[in-house]
Amino acid sequence: MDKTSQESSDFKVDGVTSWLSQWVWSSPGRAVRLGHRESRWFADDLQACPVQKPVFIAGLARSGTTILLEFMATLDGVATHRYRDFPLVHMPIWWNKFLDLTPRKRMEPVERSHRDGIVITPESPEAMEEPLWMSFFPLAHDSAVSQVLNAATVNPGFEAFFRDHLRKILFVRNGRRYVSKGNYNVTRLEYLLRLFPDARFVVPVREPAGHVASLIKQHRIFGENLRGNPRALEHLRRVGHFEFGPDRRAINVGDTALAREVEALWAAGEEVRGWARYWASIHGFLAERMEADPLFRKAVRLVQFEELCEQPASELRKIAEHGEFADAARGADAFAERIRFPRYYAPSFSEADRMAIQDETAEVFERLMSLQQQ
Image 1: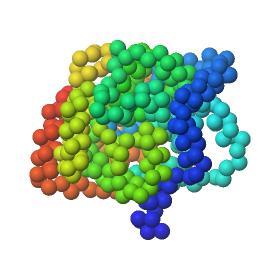
Image 2: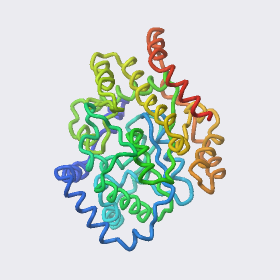
Image 3: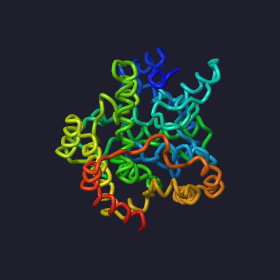
Image 4: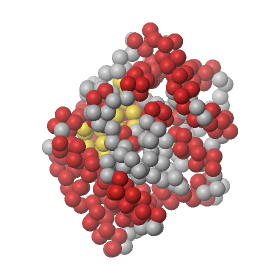
């Protein structure tokens, strides 16, 4: 199989998954009602699964969130979502019981569609919270409105459903600590801290030039493979993935004009400056909130991507200690050999491109590095 054919095959969505996800999103309220029914059915089991010190990994795509999720999934007692949890994410207990009773052929690990060397199976940890957020916050991916959910945000229906959902993942995985990856949670961390005062957040930060290069490469791959592939494009929408491809959308960090500027730059083909400005908007928002709230800053662990690649064992140990995992040192040392600098592409920016990235991001990057060292 040539490279183009192989990449295209990674974006195929099987008919059953497509049909079931369409059934869910044809009536999100129905999925929520079934989720509540599942909660009542397993009420006694969920009562025995308290949510203690959950860890939320968040940040801009291509910063290392997936590898950090995979690391934490190896720690003792950790429960995460897995690829197999989609599409019936709203009712994970019934869905997983059904899957366990269904004969399935053994799936060999394959490289994920991002073409970044990370291999996956249906049992691999993955970001699967987003459909829940979209069910209760229908404008969650509308770049024309603020996507910031802070300590003043109140949504009782979501809060009850979400707490039960975390307990369900602990129950299904027989775990004690819930860990999730959700890139879009970067503008929701203060809300999550209100819901779970003992929560910890891990936010990787990548040096802007390398990060922008990776984002551009990823958008190209998704664009090439989603063109003329409506089933795959709809699948990404249903799973809550609007970071790359034909339906790319900027996260509005409370500045609608800025979000529109970013999308206008993308539309004009100014990918480098567009991504650089977007990098600065996301990380500038994070820096501002950390500077304004000492309690929030204490809950956040900034992870410098390049330091993670250069000193993986040391950095993983610090991350695990921030999350208060008992087996931090042993788990970090065992996983460290899997982490290295990306070797599957090399940035090739012109001098003008490099200057654009510097102009857009330098001040914010300096603020974040200062916060990381505090």
